[in-house]
Length: 80
Image 1 (cartoon, rainbow, N blue to C red):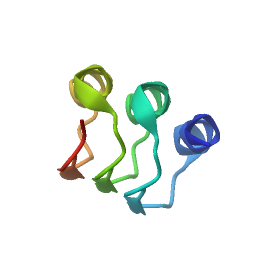
Image 2: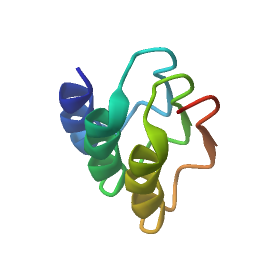
Image 3: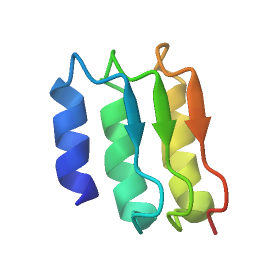
């Protein structure tokens, strides 16, 4: 699931918009995506709505944003 998406995002150079809303990604998935966002230089829009990533998952994404200068739109709505 999210681990494979994270691995693909690490080498992605073309995809700019990704909608992963309502995919039950969870904390572990958010961690994989966060790690990928530290490396990815193409993705500008990411939707992670309704994925139950919680505060811990949001923290993983937030850490990635410290080094990601490309992502301009991020939705984390309705994550518990």
